[in-house]
Image 1 (cartoon, rainbow, N blue to C red):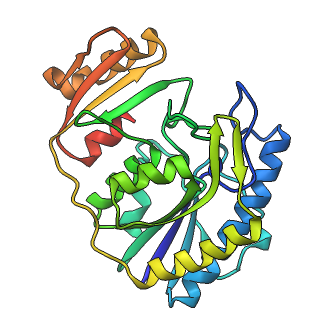
Image 2 (image 1 turned 120 degrees about the vertical axis):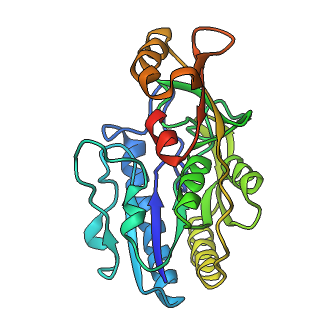
Length: 272
């Protein structure tokens, strides 16, 4: 079986970031995150091959998408390099991974506004205040897992802070999880011992890889509600997508909010 390691950064062990900032490459916290992410990815790669994986791919999706020391990663793993082209949509590469695949998530984080979620946000804290599917708030991991499920790819493992992990379990309790740290605020956490975290990631990934289940069913049509931070951005999105959605896009309770009825995963990805 093939596996994809989906890598973000905010949820890795030993990192809390800085107030009023994202986890950007010019900060000391980012440098710590690169080391932590490299270690976590290495444990996951080893566990996957020890469990009998045929191929392991690394999808680095944080910022500039170059957030690990690639030369320190097991050479059997292959990093996914996405072409910069018009029409490239989120997780589209899953269509080319055959015959079967499953996803594990490292470094993902709680959704925007979560109490005690370390560095919590949803894709872009400057752009989005929340995203809801059928009235329920969702985060980046929920969204990626939902998109993957439409391509028959299950999400089987996640490691992050305890707030994110509680949200993962609410999405699908079958997912094997590891807590990397305990959130005490957006920029505060109690850290678990590093070696305990890495051992738990190895053991958890190996277990998940040996117990892959069917993906959760994604249902359409789906009602999507997005609250944008800026009114101007909401207006721009409305004008841009009105020709695609027509009456299936409208304003919500105020001019920050847009509501969409999406009929399939391609329409969902158009609005993210």
